[in-house]
Amino acid sequence: MPTLVLLPGLACDERLFEAQRPALPAALPVRVSDAHMRHDRIETMAAAVLAETAGPLILCGASMGGMIAMEAAHQAPERVRGLALLGTNARPETPDMYQLRESAIELFERGEARDVIELNAGFAFHTSRGGEAALLRRYVELVLDAGVPQLVRQNRALMQRPDARVHLPALRCPVLVMCGDGDRLTPPDCSREIAELVPSAELVWIERCGHMLTMERPVEVNAALGPWLARLSAADAVAS
Image 1: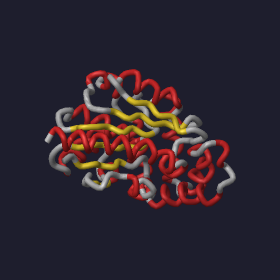
Image 2 (image 1 turned 180 degrees about the vertical axis):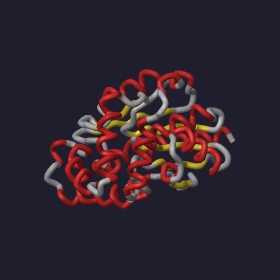
Image 3 (image 1 turned 90 degrees about the horizontal axis):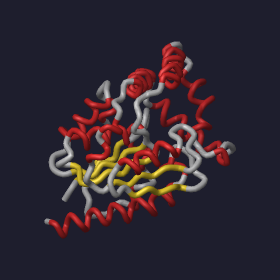
Image 4 (image 1 turned 120 degrees about the vertical axis):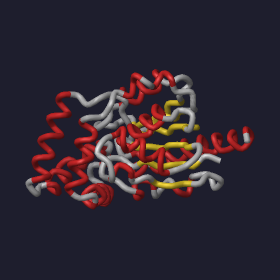
C-alpha cells in the first residue's frame, strides 16, 4: 500500500489540509511533509520527501508543494504511484516575479512581514471572497506562524526552482491537476499547461475559487480528491 504524503505550500503546514482529512481513504497511510521547512531548494526538499518515507508514494502538493511533488516524481518515477497537483506551476521563475520576491524579502528582513502579508492576502483568494475577514485572518496567521527566516528561505527556493516542464511528458503515473478558476497567484494557464504535458492527466476546475483551494473550497476539493485517491488505493490493492 502506498503512503499518501501531503505537501503544503509556501510557509504553510498541516493546517492547509485539515479540511481534507475526512475525505482521505481510510486504507491509505498519511503523513504531512515538512521538508520545505528544512531545506533550501526544491530539489533537496523533494529528495528529503523520498528519503523520509519508504516504499511507494502518492504525493499531493499544493502550490509550492506541487513543485516538490513534480520534482520527486522526476527523481524517483518508479516510486510515485500518483500525483495530485493543486494550484501549482511547472514553469521556472519569471524575471518579474524574481524581482517581486526580492523586494518582499527585503521587507521581511526589515520587520515588515505582517504588513506585506496582510496587504497581499486577498490575492490568494477569489475576488468574491475579499470581505471574508475570518478566512483572510486564518491565512495570514498561518503564513506568519512560519516566521521570517522561513519566508525568506522558501521564497528563495521558489526563485531558483527547476523547470518541471522538461520532465512532465515522461510521467506515467495517474496525475490529478486541480486549479481554482480565479487563481490570481498561479493562473489557470499554468495548470492547463501541466495537464497538456502529462499523458492522461485529469484536469479539474474549482469554480469561484482562488489559489488557496483547500481552505477556500474544501467541499469541492474533497469531492474530486477523495474519489481519485480511492481509485488509486483500490487499483493498488488489486495489483498487490
